[in-house]
Length: 100
Image (cartoon, rainbow, N blue to C red; front, side):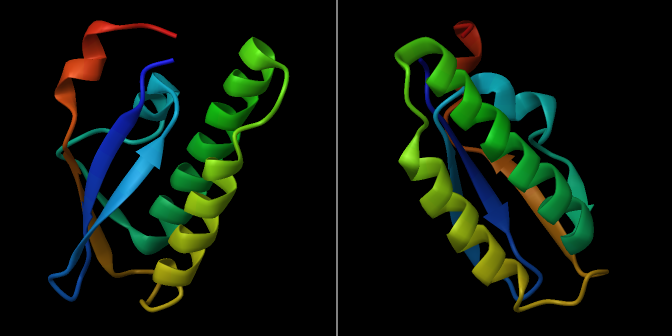
């Protein structure tokens, strides 16, 4: 399965990476969009759950790295107000050529 790396630009000017083991993440997070913290929480965690289920369907087990990513995302989200804004940027555009 093609992996996807997105870069999240946080309200304090810092950036972090968001990993998904599946391109399904593009159904939830669009490079170039700006989301509130509340929207990122809802969409980001849903994307990770769906990506993990895709791995389970294909390989017979869930992706534990998505659990780690979800935990990191929750910790980071807790640092900001629900109305603060985050920008999504793409790091690995080449994965768009593949499908799951």
